[in-house]
Amino acid sequence: MARRGGAVHVVTTKREYKGKTYSSHLLRRSYREGDKVKNETVGNLSHLPDRVIEIIRQSLKGQAFSPAAEAFEITASAPHGHIQAVRTAMHHLGFEDLLASRPCAERALVVAMVAARIVAPQTKLATTRWWHTSTLAEDLGVAAANEDDLYAAMDWLLERQEAIEKKLVARHLHEDSLVLYDLSSSYFEGDKCPLAKLGHNRDGKKGKLQVNYGLVTDSRGCPAAISVFEGNTSDSVALMPQVRKLQEKYGLKHVAAVGDRGMISTKTIKGLKADGLAWITALKSAQIRELVDGGHLQLGLFDERSLFEIAHPDFPGERLVACRNPELAKLRAGKRQSLLAATAKELEKVKGMVEHGKLRAQGEIGVRVGRVVNKYKVAKHFALDISEGTFTYSVLDDQVAAEAKLDGIYVIRTSIAKKRMTAEDAVRNYKLLSNVERAFRSMKTIDLKVRPIHHRLEDRVRSHIFLCMLAYYVEWHMREAWRPLLFADEDQAAKKTRDPVAPAKRSDEAALKAASHELPDGSPAHSFRSLLDVLATIVRNTCRAQGSDDDSPTFAVVTTPNATQRRAISLLEAIAP
Image 1 (spheres, rainbow, N blue to C red):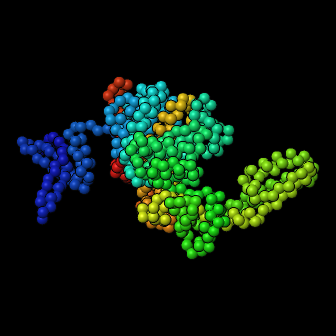
Image 2: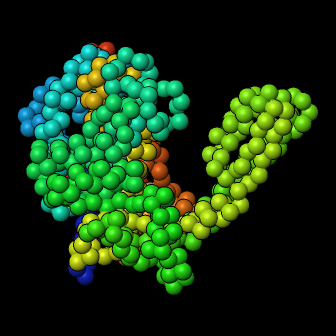
């Protein structure tokens, strides 16, 4: 009898055996034989994955399948992961509420500028061009903003600086806490800003006008406030206005200011005493020499220990903690010898020019010699004899030996009583100033690029520097959260107990990361910037049906993050302000 028909389908059966469920998938064909419908098994599909079986099932029902590339097309792609990372950190810091409690166009623009400053620091005009190349402009609703809108938002931000800093101070500083303070500078492009002055240029840009700014941080280096000064303002003059701001505007009556020897001068200390504030600083080299010459600092005591306290009548009610770092002593001795040798080599050239008659006038010889000794900053160690047609020099060996005795020696000066702070902790706390220096490096160089400053108006300069501080505030928290993924040392607790005088050393784990360039799991260790670059490979694709019109509906598909990217975002989600 002839068979008729031949519909093929998938039959799934399940059975229980010893508490487990077993499934079988059979490919079966139905056919007619006379008046009867019969089935036959064509094949067993049970060994195939469930998703493949489902495709076969739907295909046999008449559903058509085609490759995704033929069904959809990508109309645009924008880097997204690095923007997501910054916005995640901002969300967990409550950054928008920090700026203003209510949403407004200015707040959105400032958030966008801070995020852009972290990811791709550029001028304001370049920023409005750049943020369309990522998902930043779309996600924050600033796609239509132009350069003038950004300037208006900067003016809005400056008006709110005091209120924002008050919130930051309340978060991170409290009565009797350590307040780190240091002053830095950045140079200008142009000469029209009233703040632009010639001063001690820390950027190595001779002849450039500059602006100074003082940064307040907590003991960890987390920024809380910043003030801007004219470019010729000295370190010591800049401290007291910031201290008064903490007292009068932000309600901190009793804090301990930590500043370097140029920042907390004798005059500044009088002001701190008058306001009832404590401080930690260090003596200048001339003051240390006076202690040694007067017999108050006996160098022989360093044979037994690297740290001890001394008293001196010129510092009533204060504590002096003398320290000697042998490694620092070797470093300074080697540097001095190198500078002396380089200077002597150059002076020999000048001496030869005089002997051969190329230099004869006393004034010409003096100018050439001055250029040499000023180049290496060791003129005090040379005796120079210049006259018409002759030049001789010699090294002042006794003076060099006297200076060498103080190599590696520094003295910490503080008004904090021993019952509140041990001598060891006083040294450790003074060294915390490196956290402020780290903040300046980040703000001024490749990370945030506060310099060069292109603004002409004084208020715009102040707003620009405050904006950079806010960007560093977000970046600081991101760096702390990402320590497990960066080359950074994760063992921060060890800093509180290690030898305060000995050179700082990485933990074994951090040293291994630095040597191998790998994390414990074998994945690459990163810098902050390279990790942002890795996250930027998470892309948001805009898709639509293949062959659609330009105005057809679209949908977004975001790249699936890899393990490193997932961990980076997860670490940021644990940030707490």
